[in-house]
Length: 161
Image (tube, rainbow, N blue to C red):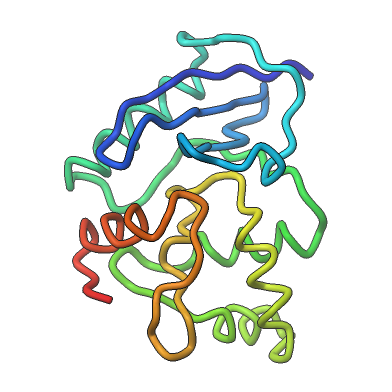
């Protein structure tokens, strides 16, 4: 299956959006580790309908006009990773959860570290809001876009960590 990409300027840097025929597969950060998200060969696709929709929705989010996304998603990962990433989609705008909260939600209360590892590999940052996951003590923890971007996204949602 072919994968397409486009670049989007945003308040947190230039994002690389990637889509397949099934949906959005990745949002990558300017300084992203190329090993974090494995991708096939990409073709420039500025007019790809999924990428156009993702850009529109992300633009509305950054402008403070959108709290939920509707663009189709196409997660690629293990079954456990996909469960974690789907759990991220359930965290409401303007709220945070801990890794332990997500592990408990998945019925695996002792799997906080595994949840953290899956969270770190979340390919669709912002839309699958891994920035809303914080440490059990309320501290900000690692984020592929950097802690500055995480703070900015949380502040956009009215969260003061």
